[in-house]
Image 1 (cartoon, one colour):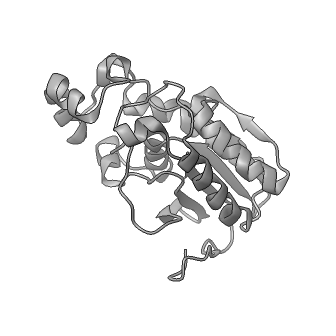
Image 2 (image 1 turned 90 degrees about the vertical axis):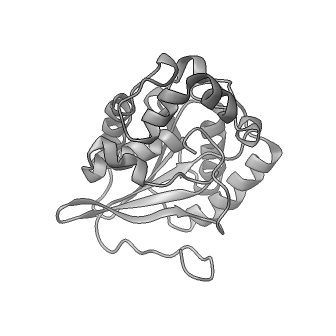
Length: 222
């Protein structure tokens, strides 16, 4: 992303992965933990997806994959409509399952499960709400991303439309970071993206939370 807000090709040679978070939902605004709950985009979320899709289409992606949850799937459809590409949906790209945390607000989670919340933020392995570990999310999502990346041409681009927590853990896994360091990757704003480029030593983080002027991160990964 250039200083003027235009999308730039900063990857050089090699394949690249664009990990794009879905648009805004009502639960994002209410700061409710969504997890695998299938919450739809708001009108604002749809507008965000359309605006971002116009930018991402200029990067001429070769393939699009997406979580099958509606907020990600509908976001992906906006890019598909501009590029003519099909969207391959995969439940392995869903957000973290968070058990009893799902549907609760940020403040309710802190009030009821404060110790677990604090441990998660410290990078400790925590089954939030009795759900998945972050490493388990990476175990299911990262292989899907890599499998589709292997199908790309040498300088091809894959767009992955998913969720804040799943994108963060996938980036951490592909960069080879220890799981307790994944929290150092800041959250993604709705409909913003991160770019990984293929280098001689593996994947490199080229851009993070690109696509807009700074806005609050509203979501499960906040």
